[in-house]
Image (tube, rainbow, N blue to C red):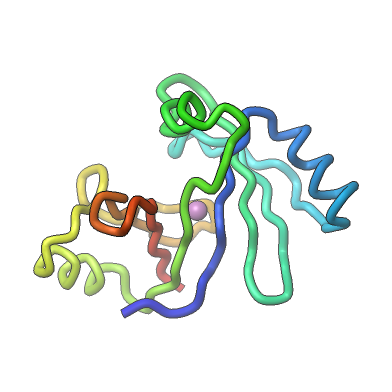
Amino acid sequence: MIGKLNHIAIATPNLDEAIKTYKDILGVKISTPLDQLDHGVKVVFIELPNTKIELLEPLGENSPLENFLEKNKKGGIHHICFEVKEINSAILSLKKDGATILGDGKAKIGAHGKPVIFLHPKDFNGTLIELEEV
Ligand code: CO
């Protein structure tokens, strides 16, 4: 069902510091920060030759990152995102196979302006998985 690895998302308590680390130590180019109120995150993207890294910081109240950062004070890998061709047929197939889709179970517009869903970590070895229609 899944295609390419689209990105790996890393949660950080301080986006500016994370940006500095990635720029100064790893020498990457970083996109302009983007507020995504719908998802409760502020995000930047790092383009690598074979995938992307998303750096995330909580935004607004009830950010889904708050819990994660309480458990992982310095941040950590928050989710990985795979590409799918058709999100709605992916949803049907996942439901049939008993996977838990977070939220209302419907696709939302994600960080790249494309439909996404998130799958519960309990079904995937403790890893939060995002699927993005590409
Ligand atoms: Co993501």
